[in-house]
Image (cartoon, rainbow, N blue to C red; front, side, top):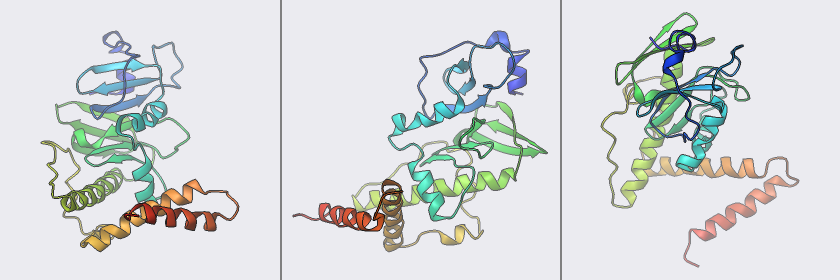
Length: 247
């Protein structure tokens, strides 16, 4: 079983430093060791599908913030959808079939992260979370607060919403999305009948409303704390509308 404690003790000689590492969808887990009171070779232990397990000097927060360089979106879509569904804590990084979930919700602090799209199974054991990956690894992380299955459900729901919206947009362009061979747990809640899933989109008009909410989210953030913010947002909306038309 992989834990940060095991890797920093029995497994310490097996680890190496990889400072040229750039984030990608093959990250399976990020283990925060930034506050460990000992001399080690980094602040994060990365569990990676291709490169194995290694140290980097960057924190887990710094690594997750670098995802915008990889996919040009980062946390933008996740934040917009969370605002739309009134989710306020534990912001994940969701981009289609790629989803990373934090173990705690403090966005200003460092925490462990797990890739839902690499998982076969999750299990909560008190204040610990145990994950089984696609390649048979068992990873255990601290999970100080909350219901693990509810947390995973919410991340999968956000992924489902993004994928359905993207599929609808692609269909308008006479194209079809082909999902990857393996998506981990991201399809496990497709038949869920919770209150959130009752808001699943049906028509193109529904998808248009969702895209409009993304536009509103961006305008709200861009004009935050500005004088006459409502007037500025209306001007931007008119300019965006004009861009969509021929003239």
